Image 1: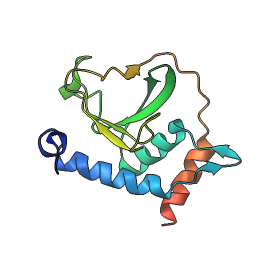
Image 2: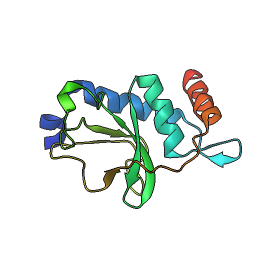
Image 3: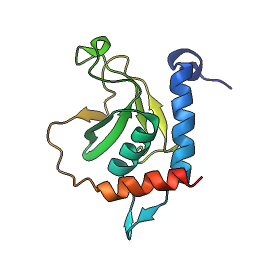
Length: 136
């Protein structure tokens, strides 16, 4: 069955981004340098490959990073309640892990923009994930 969101909400381009992101995430390792891969590095790596901007914020009570399907700071998205859709490559506590999320009425209640983000971003992990993507 094809659900309403797939049929009516998301564009072909967004569905293609979802497909490509899923393929990339399937190729990513579970850990690098003895540490698990975190959403912060995975989202940045996928975003660089797909040409998408990332957002550091919160998902409920946890610090989280996701991607925007379009640039957030364009004229089209000039108010806080009009936002591009989210491509989340590491949804906390949910399956499937990679999801498209509609933002028609602002951010869904799980996602929060945050000016306070205190997570060390491991650039070497991002680069290594991108190298894994290239290997396939």
